[in-house]
Length: 193
Image (cartoon, rainbow, N blue to C red; front, side, top):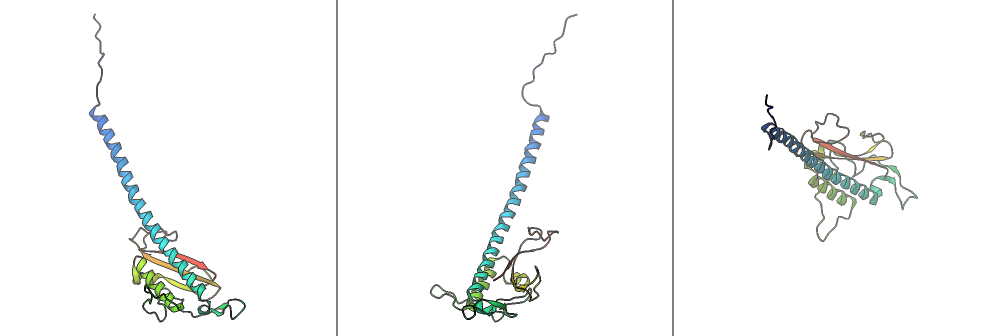
């Protein structure tokens, strides 16, 4: 009996191989799109958090430049700064407002001179630079004397500054927001002035 040779050679790809390659490519592209979206979210959070850090540090420097507004006894009249006041133009409770605020007096030719003018210009910058503006600033930002984190009890020697800004629900990357459903992100700075 003659031997039949089954020697056939395949050339090209089969339809199944093409479909598998297409599915793998699609999954990879979709993964990259999701990664890009997450990357944009992280960059946005980073920018807003850096603005909050800069604003909090700026307020600390304004307070340090005006020690008589924060301390009972301040240098150079006293040997050292001592006794943080219970009331100060720099204190603001969560949900409250700063006392006796006015419009910022800074212009190209005039810089704010007094502690109150400096504070008022800082408030205007904070409301303009952080998303959520005046509403979130008034409802969630606070500056207070605090003995424990997040507790404005008027005790201790630590000044707590909490800056807040509005985000899309579920996009706040705060470590304290375990459910990740808050529309407000915060940055807290605790410092001994």
